[in-house]
Image 1 (cartoon, one colour):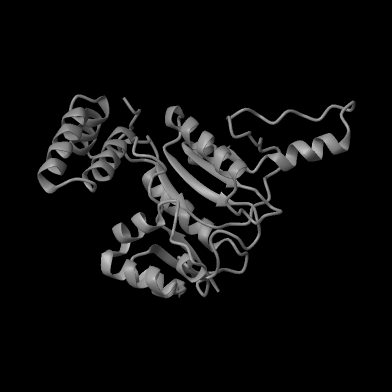
Image 2: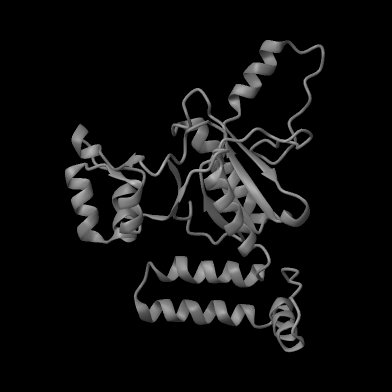
Length: 265
């Protein structure tokens, strides 16, 4: 068995000051670790006057949550998907809470964002998992951007083959196609994907946040236009990073042969 890390395009074209890492993991929150609502507000404690039913109803309404790591992992934020009854199926409430939470992170201190599931066995699955855009087998066509994102990821010809046939593919095939970034063997504790994603997040965390953000903007915007326009976007982003203190710190650290201390300024 194994778990998958997969690519996910940005939810909007506006640049975000963080990097996304997609994974599947079953999580039991650590004791004392506060869970926040989709608006980033700590969940209120249930008073004695409140009934258990009211508390249960309020908890059931929360389908997407957020947790900020601390200590050496300060700057890594986890978006927690917790629609247990529907196994994280996409719904109006789920999508609304996800969009609101992701939008709120635009002005957040997070440098790296890890998307994580609290539902056992769901998002993403084992290396033998099957995935596909099967809408044509139901008389439909892929919606929510599926017919547009897939060609941009695997190429037009292969995307047509997958969509026209409604074919399901396994994790190793998806990896070979470039549809997923990594396929990792599951470990005994069942958190192989999380460990892999957290390791990747820790590699990104110490890098200059403004440089990472502008690199992301250059790539996300440049991929949508012709090469000449894309080069202009890159020059614009490059010019914005030159006057930053982080750029000066990076050069000084290189010359002084020491690790840089970036502040995001």
